[in-house]
Amino acid sequence: MAKSYLLSSSPHVFENIDVRRLMLNVILALLPAAAYGVYLFGVPAAVLILTSVASCVILEENDSAAAGKSGFVFAGGHLYNDNSSLTSAGTDGEMVRGVVSRTLLKAGTDPGEIIAVKAHGTGTRDNDLSEGRGLAKVFGEGLPPVVSLKGVIGHTLGAAGTVETALWLSCLEEGVIPKSFCFAETDPEIGFAPSQENLPAADGSYLFTFFGFGGTCTGYVVTKR
Image (cartoon, rainbow, N blue to C red; front, top):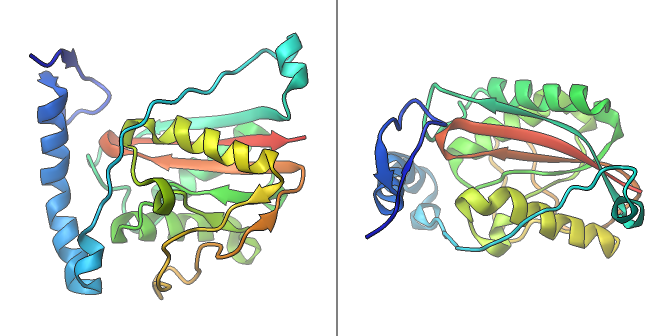
């Protein structure tokens, strides 16, 4: 029998519910968006690749011996819970703009200092519009390279934060900002495309964004040194 958890991070889920039923609810909630995606972009837009992984990220105090050996510093971040929808961040980009702006403020980082953005980047119309428009509102014409990793590893759901952070930092350690895989065409309503080539990873600030199921929206800045 699957173990039950009391979930309270979203007002839409307020009772004991096992993981299997929770995932079924998520899939059912995504069906209208999938149907609209097929209508707009054809059958490939209906595909959402879900993958299972285990990952962790270790944070050390700045004055610890381990931290002194690390090439990265957590500059700061912002966590926001959106109670307006279980699956949508809103396609006008305003919620994303607010999260990213507060992330940069708490990290003490100006938009012009961001070298690249590790976007949530699910490839769905809703997420692409909300995140694309939100990033454009924050960065304007100074938008840095934007990369999604889900074209390579799929959507890892609750593990996306740590696994994509670990993968991105591994790339930076190798001196590379990776390209976005499996990109096909630019949405004219967004107005820009994700990065399509590997780029050198300079020292400096990198923005990470995540806009997950249940309304958990977060961003943080990591500095490569």
